[in-house]
Amino acid sequence: MKKAARIFILILVLLFVVSMLFSGAFLLEQSDHDCIGDECTICMEIRACEDFLRSISLLSTQITVTAAIVFCCLFFCGLYAYIADRITLITLKVKLSA
Image (tube, rainbow, N blue to C red; front, side, top):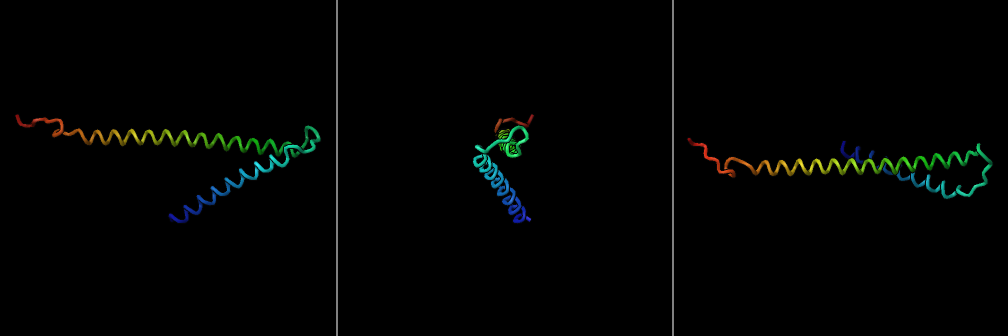
């Protein structure tokens, strides 16, 4: 199961990268086309590619920020657990006898 999940993730990443590359290539290739006006299909496709790339960049930013927040939470939880493990009755030198 682990190998199948890795292959699936690799295929998704490759599709993601290829779609970004093809969108960028289309924008570069068609940036100076002969526009026929408001109903130009190439202009519509250019806008769609720009929107796609913009949403992808926003998504990657959101993922990065979320990962940073999760990492900080896990770090501080681990730090708290480490400190809490260090505080025992013996380390505090508490005498239990009356």
